[in-house]
Image 1: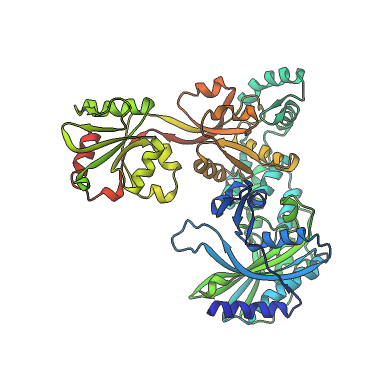
Image 2: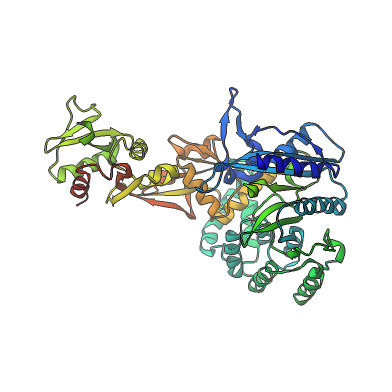
Length: 351
Length: 229
């Protein structure tokens, strides 16, 4: 009851900023989750089949339902929406509940990135102001900065793509960095043995299919792989630059002053301007605003700005609001591109 | 009366059944059935409080977790594949010296460009970007495979449940790669498949297991110690 009143209060405050309250479907097609997150998320789904054999699941989060609604309504114009409800995820920790209470707000079809990013953050800070939490920290990062850094480094394309793809999986990413230092993914003995088979296969019909891949695809990738430099002398230094970059944390207003000398020192042609971040001023004494290069690495669908608001509860900081920009979510789901930015309030903190 | 009966689950067929029965024979505990070879219940003259139930090795794990059988013989792979709420109610009392095998990830031998999981990850990404679908993995071990692939950074894939002859899946259009248990690798090779260099998921063997729900049952410790000597 208490949390219902609170969620109504929060929704009212979001609504007062021009967001329209919408209802979302509780059941969605499992394929959309699979397309977005692959099998890794499937184990958290409550799924079942309908009479036509279609696999459905209880919504594991509200963002996907909201984006699907926007696409199914064939909406083209910018839409500011908000919603509240329960998301359902199986839990493998005794203490966790399988019901996640969430309030979300989004700007779909967002064309003015800077303005809309700022609006989502301002709305989040307004919710924070009206909450009972006193001490808080707003962390802002931007995955585009990381992607840009990787593009500028002198590393094989294969490695570039790997690092970008696995940015979201921290432990595996660290393993990859170790491998980058030695480039130990090619075994010269195997390559020599396979070269003769390669030549034999090249003479055959290139459209022949083996386990879903054509000879042409297999051989082209083999060729590309062996032509890529086996050892890059810069492997170690590049790995060091990436690690140092991801450790950068500082007050947001000082971010350009910290980032620009870092890029300059490492001879990387990137300049971060003051206006790059959606916020510059902080009028709240109890709120610390910081730039964190590795912020939000655990949520894969963000494509540029990522932020989180953490609040202090019994001497520990816990996540209260998290959000960011997800311009690629709809294309990952197999639909047309819809630029979107949004955030979700973790209502379980009130329980 | 039935409360005092100790139910032992044995594999109902194959090599695993044969090797398990040998354990009893070596201890001079001869198992007999009242209704001939097809009878799925058995008894041991020397141990009148013991009832033998022949089950599929997977079923053995399920029944142990429910406490319907007190002791069971099954594979380590099947235990690790089962859901967490099943595993938590089962104790491994002894790893036995038979039923050895390794659960592996295998690909078509002609995929020359794929040697390691790093390659597989790139191919999975290509499937998603160019073919607009996920790489499919046929398996009898969905939980182990999902966990393994994810731990190695391969996340863009879809599991396809296989009930048998998994090796044919890449060549019938059911899936692109497979994960399966192998002991010598001969079946994989005969079907033009190759294990990835870092594609070992789990080493397995037959195990003597006990249901945690039977901990306090009279006589259980004695029988476990007799069978594990």
